[in-house]
Length: 176
Length: 343
Image 1 (cartoon, rainbow over the protein chains, first blue to last red):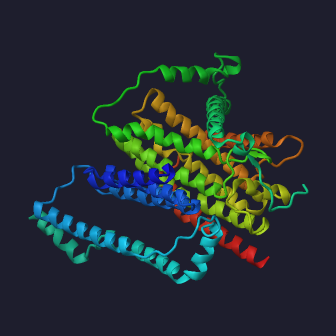
Image 2: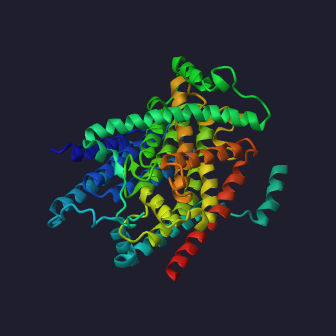
């Protein structure tokens, strides 16, 4: 088997294994980053350098860094609390079912004959034209989803405004 | 200049040597040798420039004009003991210097030093440079987190926030240049190819700093922030954080961070030269001479800025990026797109 094809997939599997087994959340994020670099390598091996570079730029440089950022801003420097046995097995059950279902669909899917390697089909021009022309609606609705996510994040972190009535009550309690 | 604009293709080292397995180590050797000399000279130049601005002498003892001072410093760093602090996060701590070092070496191969030769000619060169630059952020965070030191962690936190914020105006300002390249240089060649960007400027006899002055200014400011240089050197503000994310690194491990930092300065300057200052284009002198003359002139400006302006506060830094640079760069991009579609 071609090393150019096996190496990226080995990196993906090793990274994914690190991402799910490490209890240290930052190690898990770095495992995910390794896995994503592997995905970029797989795109490169499949003859699509543009997708590979975007994978590194967006997923490694953007998403993984954002995750690190989220870890940084939350207070998880203490060891994470461990759930009970029931909770863990329920999570494992859900994840296992998801894996089984996903694998079943992928194995049974008929992808049709693959296109032969061509630099043109995945060139930056072709991708750009498809995104803004053929898949215009999907592309724009994705931006809407991202906007909603940002607004949602702001709503979640917003503190409740302190009502004047509460302020009146508080000093009395302290005094008493 | 009879060559038409679309069939320009510089020779790569693989084409020159004929064998990719021979060309790869050769290119790596060329890059490593050039970068080592570059870092040694830049550290010396930084000390001389700072001395000159502060009316001091700078290094004078080792070699003529103190030229060999950094060589002596390098030998000292190589022979120093590697101190490993207690209770570090071992894999992250040990991998971080390598993670910081490898991407910058890779990015250097993409730059068109002259009209006819380039180490690696890639249609996505600009994207590759940004993608590799994004990986540096992860290395900095690995170092800060792995060191088990609050100053290192604070430095890393600041650095990550600063880098991902200033990446946006950096890429947006480069993108408006790509639009201009694509409008001028025909649709067949990629506007992301660094050789092509330089070639179009030489062919059309216009440097893009004249067409995109605002983008050039935004790019330069963001580049200062991306390389963690003063007035944006908040991640390693020595009066607050000892040395920021590399506080706990000594000897060669520290040198690797230092190496990548000074190489990053060269990379952003070379990218600015390619995007805005015509690359190797210039009269009389050969291409590589112009290319490096322009790059080092920009580095001199970066040093000049560093020793002239005081450090910003962190909130000033972030507010400046999100309320001034990003809106301006988006407006500039829209205006460029509008101008291209009208003209």
